Image (cartoon, rainbow, N blue to C red; front, side, top):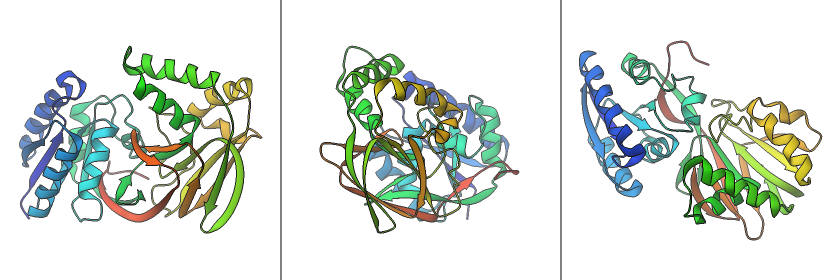
Length: 295
């Protein structure tokens, strides 16, 4: 196969930061003896369709330049194929890149990881035909995302924080039907996180012991708790110490089903849809380019 590299970028993301980073990366890839060409589209679905066509035609690798949204789109094209995915993280979250121990905020260093071409097979989550690499969430987290998407007066972190405060004011436990590898549980939960990898939200280690190559999800359940208690739990998520709190339990399963009224599920920063949903952990679903010493 040729050493052609498809550089996948959203031209409208980050006020042009993606395009600038993609240009820098392309120059470095050429200097390393590879042949990059850009694949882009203003919308996610069009971008996925174009990238799938490129993968079918045959390329040495795909490189996603951007944040978790760009990576999520690229996963839809490369999952289940032998085409490896490299990531040059420039977004605000970069949680899939964190899981791969990639350099954050350093386009040059991340591009050299890509050019070194060290492949590893890792697991992905799948809901229907949709793949995800990080954490699927439902409950408090998904409600915050839904509220933030309805808000038009603010953007970025300001909008998310305002939505979080709004949902704290409306906090109420949710009766879930949770099924782990066919075993049913009725639980009252503040949130449930189904982790293929450790973190979401830019380093929030909701599933701190999740392993990308064990064929299992780590399922973190935060039981019913009030606002004051939730505010004590949430700051510990960045270190992963929340799992020692008595309101938090962690389970492992290859297939997870969630049922609850009036709730949605989100993963990789994208809305997957309303519950009920079933997520499967698919072993070795995607080949990724990682640092030479990884895992």
